[in-house]
Image (tube, rainbow, N blue to C red):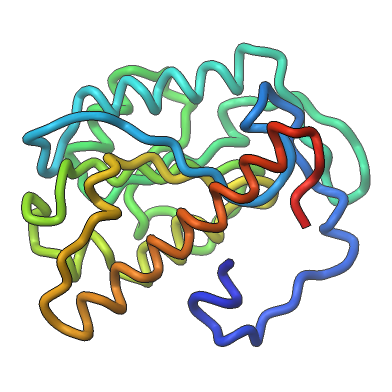
Length: 202
């Protein structure tokens, strides 16, 4: 996804990285992309409902016996250090941080630039494109989506209100911004079906 959406297919994965995968309850198992829907209305820079959903997801991964396979084929238990939780707004970062222990890795895109983890979770926070603080160009920023999802070695998850995928683009640039998220969602749905059926995503 990262190569196709942001780098015109110029990126290639290193072959030995293909063995990395997450062993967790379906549909979180395997590799690739996942889209998790969060239902809420009226949220702009903070969504308590989505924060609770993200915190629960992190606890399921850490406390539920999940593990991941590293590049050397070694199996490791998932800990808080293995999950990057990213949000576009400081208010949402704070809301999630209040629900998780201090060792959890939670921050904005800028904080995690250059860092990696087996799992990344991007909480998009806002209930609709119209409610986005600083407008579509900030919430749908291709750079933010790129950084938030490319931090993951095994699985990149986006948590979002479904309304964010129903964008009425008024300009070519807005269409371009929305297309990256919609492309992520399309690939994620295909890969989730494969994970649920027991076949590994390509």
